[in-house]
Amino acid sequence: MTPRKVKRTTSPKAKSASSLSARVLSLARKLHPYQVQVRRHLHQRPELSNQEFDTTHFLTAELAKFGATCWKLKLPTGIIAEVKGSSPGPTIAIRTDIDALPIFEQNKIPFASKSPGKMHACGHDAHMATVLGTARLMSELRDEFSGVVRFLF
Image (tube, rainbow, N blue to C red; front, side):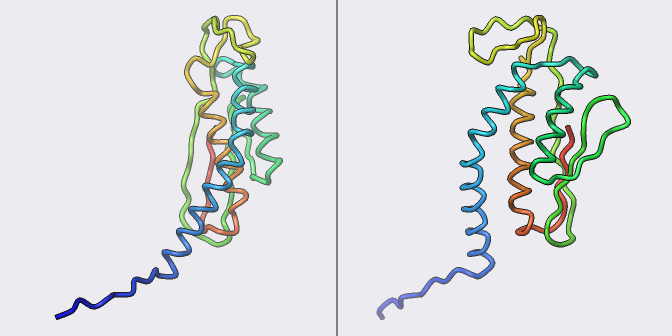
């Protein structure tokens, strides 16, 4: 008996998911320089907990540039933003801290902290850049997903 050749096909749903994955990866690669720039900007301007006024202003302005809906909190700092997809669906949240630590930066890098005694030694600058980049990416993909993505800074 000779083995039959089986023609493998990919379902339309799988093709669509594969196409979306490729688009997400392409957009993420294009966003990488933006995220590096944001991270360095935030790293140079650390603010301690409950004093992140400039950070909140910066994040709000960036989110507004790509059409995210923003809400101020009842707290003096922090922001909630949201990107809605093209149709109703689940809501997910992505969160990041925004504060720095009371530490003197000793790194000799071009984007070192400009605030003596304050530093993003905790990585929150990178976290904010990642979440902000994700918000921008989701804004560009809003016609391709259902539901809501909420961003908590």
